[in-house]
Length: 452
Image (cartoon, rainbow, N blue to C red; front, top):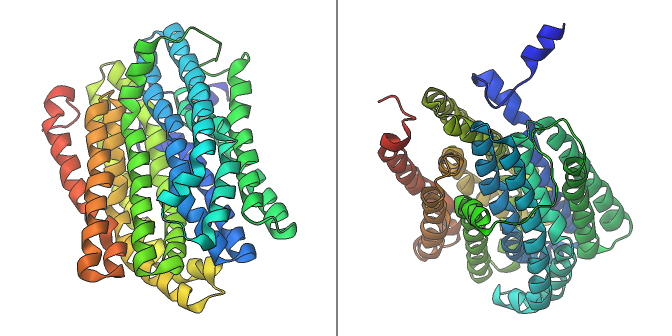
């Protein structure tokens, strides 16, 4: 029995087949899905208990809140790649120092983002094009959520580091606990107490405390993982290296949020509040469905970084081939499932309004074609982050969202009207597919991850 248990333990240094990859990455995949569900549950309760205008208010402020919380993603992804590479080089003490620095920096920058965002949120809401009908709720929801920015940033950071610490199951348990907290509080505060957007914001914030501070307590004590947090002097060279490496995740988040702002402005022009509400439902579905594919990148990135640090090009080749196969197959599966469930999902969120439901289903039918290639494009960017090549990862993310998608959402409606808005992301994913594989092929001479 003892030998069998030892064999079942998965370590970063292992050789990974499909079964082993999915076993190791499944907790991270589930973590991202549960994190995505926070916003989805908020929207579900607000839409059904406070109405479509309150729902539109949450959707119009959400991109700005995502930008303010993006620093946690940057230091989570970039720091994890650096720490996992250092572990692969067998420098465990140094890896722990790097890990501690990332946590400290996340807390400092989270505090800064909270203060700046809280002060300037009314002006931000005006810039986003909020109508008088939804402006008050947008400011209220945003300011409450911003109070919990440090917890949110820590949650993003620890979601990445759990896999590098070889504790993905612990990360899953904490994230599920946070998700359940959010659901229960939404039902209580929004459904029972009728607190509207304020109740939804409080529920999200408290769940982020669970997801951000419980891991901090765990890593601050003696534990059985590869990593432990202890206060250490911050080395700006190390912080800069992690930030440089993780800037693709920062840029992807910022670019995606900016594109969402443009979507909302275009929809206010072409379809008014109903268009913003329909886009909100589509985004929630995208967060949850693509969360599985995003989660795989979080789970697999430390493995790639470890073997890159160890100089194991054979395993890099193995990880790359299997990962792209899983991402593309997963994208096709997500597309089929989402198409089948389009009307039931739309009815759950906005079934009280027949016209809005029909608009949402129509948006689903077009928008979700993007799922087919999205997973592979997401992994391509993450793959270069894992190889500690932040610039190429950033270019892929920047072009995919801020250039390809932004241009599509601005230009296509001029030709196809509101249908052009829904099809913009699919066009962007096709262009990103071509760009990503161009980089993967040309960079093989440096990293030797392809058998060519």
